[in-house]
Image (cartoon, rainbow, N blue to C red; front, side):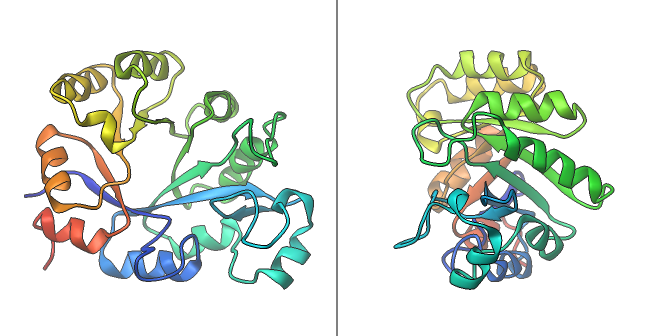
Length: 238
């Protein structure tokens, strides 16, 4: 069974600490098509990778300079370091920017910095930028319409409305939580997204039965903690 791309969620996080260079290297070695990673900023504007606003027992990353991050949390990489390790892979750059978190970036400086970084790297990277915060991916699209963008959403939202909103805003993909595609209308959702020109990249898919079901639905990518399992399930293990 071939089909969807396999994107390692925060890297191969069952094999190495998430959002680290090691996790991305392991994902690449396992044969994943790409990785998903989480981007935030330091006080001095360096793009760093971490799922939460602050490391365990640490300060909010946006409240300290990168030199302190590197000294106190040396496993937290920068986005350029991650892109270098992921050369040749699709990199889903999720910009973490939620209004209720302590590092909320109302000015969209992280979105601007991601656009500037990708441009400065001269097309070396295959990047898809996503966020749960629609204004964030709207800002990326506004700054560089050629840079692919996607809207992340959770189960419970009206999936047809999400597809139409994303397409109307110029994005190229929707990233639904797996539970959003658990009902009998999942086929119609995927078909509608494709009719509107959007890819459907589903997170976080870790069970082989779900991987097979979603592949049968025709989704475009599986974001998974276990890329090796996904590759086996899709019949892509040598």
